Image (cartoon, rainbow, N blue to C red; front, side, top):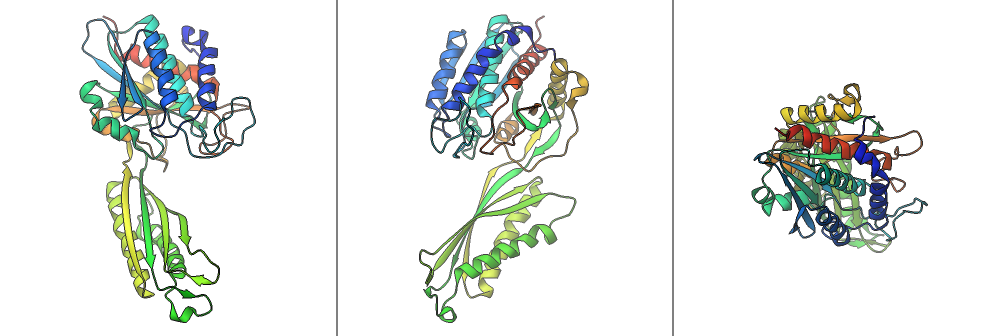
Length: 390
């Protein structure tokens, strides 16, 4: 693979950065150590650093030449609140926190591209390096946008990457249109009448009602959604009671809803509320439904996706870049940036012969360091392609 020679030269250094981030994972809006390291490296390379967006987010700005053109490159920095089960030397040193989605690799990748571009300056325009906090549920991209990211740092287009353990190392996917789902959540509080477990007939059991709601919700996708569309309702929390001989007064159910189309998203909110409330009423209970819309679908812009695919092809070879692929039901808050500026979110393969194949959000996951020079070369090639020197 024709990884840029200069980036290949410091791949070992990028690996050190990545593994250091992995050893010291930080949750969303708490990425102070990571942000400090990133800021120090950018400043050391002569890149203008701006801090404080979305608490721990930061932006590096690199200008060269006379052009007024600009491009944004984004990496996320936060970890997941989960326990790591790996035994290697760079495993997490903080209990209950783990870089289980590869954001350590994304951060190191963008740093590698920044180092290369600061050295070579083979472009004409402005590169905006966006290091974002809190992708894992915190909506850090939304907060950065709301706090004036693109007003303060104009970008003609914006691009992000994500490692993909389902793709072989040396391949990439740059697909136009909807590539990732909207992610919403629901909380249903069932209120009944508590009492002694031996006298259920004088109670209204919220555990039974909650169980009926969980079962009834499965029909929303199976029988109320177009089979050619996609939707997921996963009820993942069910909390009720504190003693084995007491029927509780209430039960709380929580779940995740994923959709690809705005009309389907509206339908899910309507039907989940209807089913929960009517099922509860049938048992003389009450259901209070709180439906919260989180990340919108991630929608790649056609022209910018084609440009990203062209750059990826220069690094990997045209035949190793997928331009068609079904969407998946995961979600990404880079979607907020794509609502504000045209751009694309590109998947970088990381499944090698012996490493990189464990799926994200798994306790044995680890970013494949062999993907670092590929991702950095893609970012750098994209900048040189989009901001050519005259």
